[in-house]
Amino acid sequence: MSTATLAKSEYEQENRSWYKRNEISITPWLFMAPAILFFMVYVIIPIFQSFEISLFEWDGLGAREYIGTDNYVELWDDPAFYTSLRNNLIWLILYLLAIPAGLFIALFLNQTVVGIRLYKSLFFFPFVISQVVVGLVFTWFYDPTFGLFNTVIGWVGLGPINVLGDPTYVTYGIIAAGLWPQTAYCMILYLTGLNAVDPEQIEAARLDGAKGWKMLWYVVVPQLKPATFIAFVVTIIGALRSFDLISVMTNGGPFGESRVLSFYMFEVALSEYGFRMGYGAAIAVVLFLIMLFFIAYFLYSMYRDERGR
Image 1 (tube, rainbow, N blue to C red):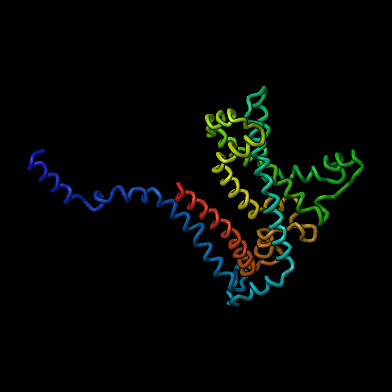
Image 2 (spheres, rainbow, N blue to C red; image 1 turned 180 degrees about the horizontal axis):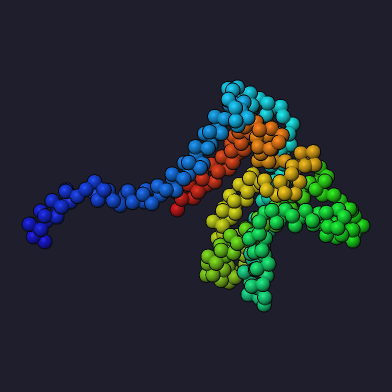
């Protein structure tokens, strides 16, 4: 390249616009800008608004009265809050059963046997139907007069049990209904993950004599770590966001024993029981802090894994 050409190139570089000089670094932010804007408007700003509203006594229409942390003090002595918190913890623990159940169904559906497409369709089915439909199906399933559940336990001399009318069983009955579509969701994640399992590692493990549980635990499961991570995240957040099944199956009853924090927040803030926006916002803040704990842990795990690569 001649000296004149180099000089011309340097001149053009210096006289380019600011955008052209920074195009590579700016372009990703321009693509992300709409998503960041929506995230700020619909997620970040409402979070801070909830913190603010929780410090007021407000019915949503009239003037707001500043009461400081009184809503949180009232929450501390509220038995219904502890019932909801206990049920959320039960949801959190039992909902995780969807992960191993989804894994084992995915392992079964990953085989090449006759009619496997039909089996896959049947297992996909609960994932594509509405939670309202799931709630209605299980309400009929548990019905003490004609439900299939009581018919089955009647064959072994038990029952009838009014699952949704008994404070002892109602939460477990709703969680069982929630596990149906959640297991299907985890199964889809694992089916996707199984497509990425390295066949050479499987073959090498077979040559070393690995099979059965050892093959699954030491060779297959470690390669499914990304799918397991996503399954844990969506299952835990799904357990803490449980609302629609409770609303459809029991409406919080009997005697409020099936409430969780999200449903109790709805009751005190938006139903005929209250219109207490400040108190509902205080419950929302507590629920957010619980979720934030898990979200922070998962984000830290992702950051640690990225640094380890």
